[in-house]
Amino acid sequence: MSGFVSGLAPHIRGLLELKRAMGLPYETSERHLLAFDAICSLHYPNQSTLSKAMAMEWAVKRPNENVNAQTRRITPIRQLAKYMASVGAKAYVIPKGIPGRQVHYRPHIFSHRELRALFDSADAIQVSPFGGQRQLIIPVMFRMLYCLGLRPGEARNLHRNDVDLAHGSVLIRESKGHKDRMVFMSPDLHEYCRRYDAAISSLYPDRIPFFPNHQGNFYSKSTPNCWFHELLEAAGSLIVASPGSAPRPYDLRHAHVVELINRWVLAGRSPEVLVAYLSLHLGHSNTEDTWFYFHLAADFHPELRGIANTSIESIFPEAHHEFR
Image 1 (spheres, rainbow, N blue to C red):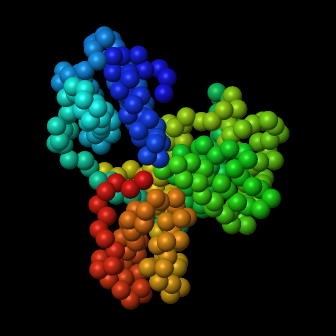
Image 2: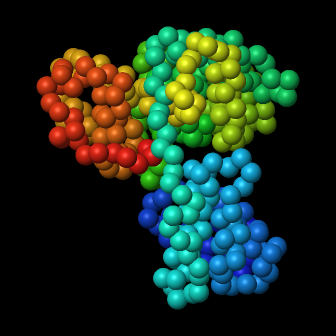
Image 3: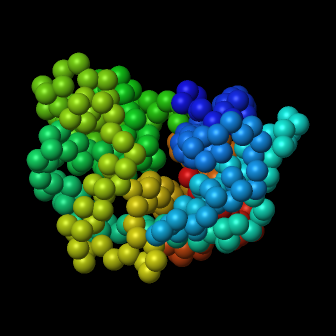
């Protein structure tokens, strides 16, 4: 929490301490707060109250910024103002309705044909002229997203010691909600990771990250996104995106869970029994997030409603929020 220099710095640190005490990583919001702090220091030096002018300067839409990104940027500043008010400090709270209604993203659920095209593209990736071993890393990282249902950040931040190649387990530690969990690789993925580890260890024998960049450190958040778009471009017309919803790395996690539900329900297993297991497997802090996937599975596999012999809407609560 270092680096805050404006007159609001004590309050920003207080908000971050509160969020961490609640078990929230709050990493993206911290980055927005750091940027906001820098602007306040430059344009409003030594001002210890959060004025309307400060808040609304931050809230202005930026070039090529969509409403969802603008909302994510504004939300922590709104939360900072509410925190300051709770401790008796003056603060302007950005009104509700700014910037407007978010666009709800509809996940892209990859077909088997599309997955094949994506992983073929990953296997054909070329060596980077800027160094690093992306030709080794990309095929493994994206297979782990799909085969284990990982969040992109979970794969990117894996430590070498988190991946137990003797027993085929992967420890996901302190992800969303600061919760640890263990997932297990299939035999095929296990062997794939063994071969990868042998190759990358010869180049980075003392590495800490499971996926090291050219300096042996962890990759930035943006790098896997860039790689993913490169894979989509290479796959070309073999992957057909829904209008307005370009596939994202996170959609590999969605595809993993939908396929899992599809297989289980077709095998006659009860969705009500599966939800507790899925919550643990996915690292959800509550089962409400997990219900989302049963709606999603029914959307992509309508036959599940009849096979499960139940009405999903009658037993699963609606899930309208953006799911993470």
